[in-house]
Length: 167
Image (cartoon, rainbow, N blue to C red):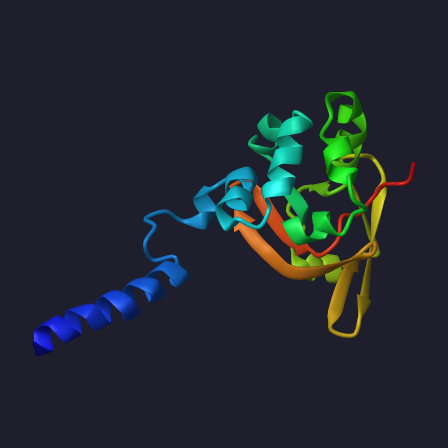
């Protein structure tokens, strides 16, 4: 009976711990490209759908390196109702592409680099501004909530808002 209780305890406590720690996977996050890594986290479903709708998936799977300022699904949900659905329409592909490429900086720009920069030139051609306020760092109006998520072809910084280029 004690063995059965021990086995059940392992199932209920050890397995969830391994799952949360990512120990159930046999790959390194550094071996995934920025698209696969974003998809792997489960918090960028809208971003991935937008990247695919804009025809940018192949580019972002390329050699890079890329620095992605990645808005979460929650960030996209903050946009006015219907905005995402409207942007995903084929007739709005150029506008969507402009917005998404504003979230990409060529090269590997790590948190330590961002802290020393006032702006960074995006693939879109426009400059995203960076500012430090206390313990927080912002890319335009978006707070960078997690930094330096390394992928095989770049780095991801997770942001809490979708940032928009100048029209």
